[in-house]
Length: 292
Image 1: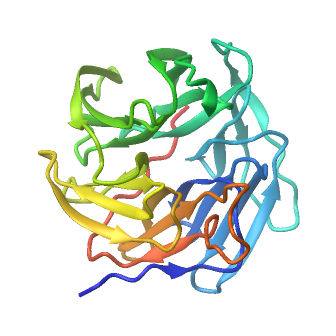
Image 2: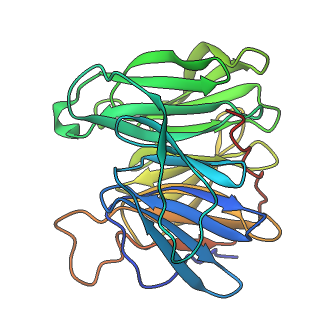
C-alpha cells in the first residue's frame, strides 16, 4: 500500500533541519537554519510555535527541560521554552573553526547522552574539507573526525554500537558506518555503508527499532530505508525535491517527520521548504537527551 506524505501546516523553511520528537510535550521541534528560528508543532492541536534565535542553529538536542543548540560559534544551552517568551541561549562550549565562514550542521546524541555534531563551510561551492565531527560530554569538546565537507546523516543503531555518518557534498555523497564504543564515545573502523544513493545526495537520517537506516535523498524527493547490512529495501516519495532530515515520533513513535529546503530559485507553488509527515509502518526510537 502506498505511503503518502502529508504536508504539515503552511510554513516554508529556508533550511528545515534537525527534527526532534519530545515525548514529554507530545510535539516535534526543528530548526530553520537561515531563518534563525526554532519551531514546534503539536500534532494533537495542530498548533505551531516558533522562537527567534540569535544565530543559525544547525541541530538541536534535548537537555533537561530545555535544549542544546549547535550554532555558529559553538554549543549553546537554553531552558524550557514557553510560548510568548524569548529563547535566550547561553554559550556552553565555543569552538575554533578550521576556516572562516563555518557553522555547525547535523548533530544528535548517542545512546549515552554525548552530543555529536559536525561543522561545515556555509558556502558549499567552496567544497572545503574543513568540517569536523565534534563530541561534547562531561569532559568538554573533542574532535573525532576531520576532512569533512558537509557532515550529515548522523545516527546510531538501536544498541548504540554502530554510528552512521554521511558527507552530502556532491563530490562525496557517501554514507559511512563505524564501530562505536559506547563506553568511550569513540568511532572506529570506518567503512563504506552506502557508496551512492539511487538518486540524490545523502542528507539527514533516522534509525528504526529494527536497525533500519532511513536517509533523505536530497535533490531526489525520496526517503530511502537501508537494512543494517546495507541493502536498500524501501523508497518513499516526498513532494519536495530537497528533503533534508527525518525523525520518528508521535504517540506510537510511528510517524516519520520530514523537513526540507527551499532554494532561492524555487517556483512560487513548489513545496520545497515544507514539512511533512508519513506513516511508513515502522517505529522509531526516542532521542536520547544530552547529559552534558
